[in-house]
Image (cartoon, rainbow, N blue to C red):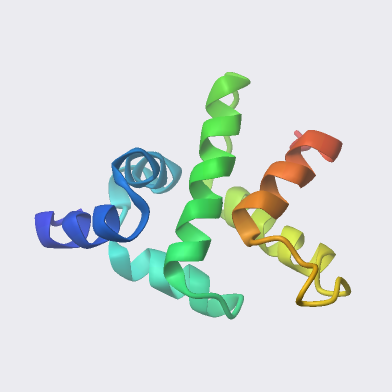
Length: 108
């Protein structure tokens, strides 16, 4: 990730979350990837990136890995799972991901 992109990411979500997002994507992490992934599910990129950081830290705490597509798919499934919840009662995506991980884990 270019320094300018990293600074923008850190400014939006904080340094700890930014580091987790970089690990989520691996060596190929770019801000463009983050914004594209968020656009695919209709979210602003900082909200998507914070949720990606939650998932990445959970996997690392459990000493597990998954490829980027599977992790992005988990975020998409979480969004789908909460679509029927009224918007004023729906948690933000990071909280929804944490809740889904706590209740269901991350399938092998």
